[in-house]
Image (cartoon, rainbow, N blue to C red):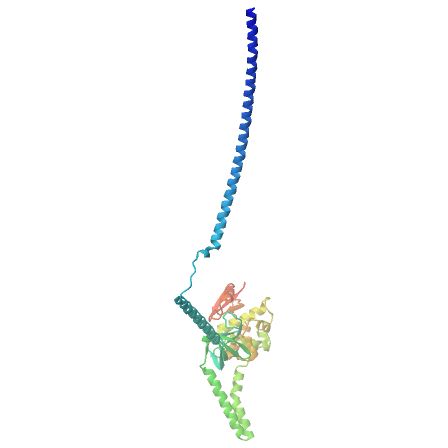
Length: 373
């Protein structure tokens, strides 16, 4: 019995121990679960805090960059804030006044110089007589590249009305007004002009004397005085041979035109030059690229400016020029087919460059001849 009670007693004692163990295990599991939950929450909180810190860091960097930029801009625009201003002394004011006075003086001197230059450019002359010292172009403006209105022969007379600062005379030549370079004009009267003046004075004196005498005597004296002029006219009369002897058709008027042009272009040059220029005209008449008549070629705009000599009768052709024109029309040809020519002495820039782009034929008396084939 005692033994049975012991077992029962033991059982009674064992039951309470199992309960305690279960309670303890449940409490431990609960503690572990609580601790795990707290750990997970902590980790989540740390992650959130790190994200927040990174965002704050980036925002701080952006703010710092913006602040630095604003500071640079402030430094740029407020650099004058760092300058210490002070009132200038009396001596400094005097220096400023002196410099200002010097600047004003230089400006006034510059204006005076400009006025003098303008005055020199517009210097007027009292219609003085000048003479060409060499063959020279009469241009529309005081510029070497300006349009050529006429070609002055040696000893041709012009009337100068003004002188420019860059070395040109504004002149009148017959009905043409233009500019000629100063270096090609002279006040020295040439011998030919002196001879003409002497002849005119003799004629005038003879006429005056004849008026004082009887009418019969006056008539005889006047005719005698005019005789030399008639002889001269007969000597230089541009008589044209028959058209049958010419290589192209040419009227009396066209032949006279040609003689005047030759005199104006190369009147003081050799016979070879005169024949060459005449053949340039003939070659153009034969070419389909130019007018098919002598007058059409010679009167073409901006081609043979010496045609003005024919219009105003300012350059009468010499007998030698007339003979050369006849020889060229009769078939004497030294042109090698040339249809263009120019004198480098009187032409430059783009004009000369255009001529030199053509096919060169030959050069006579300083004039270069070309063709474009």
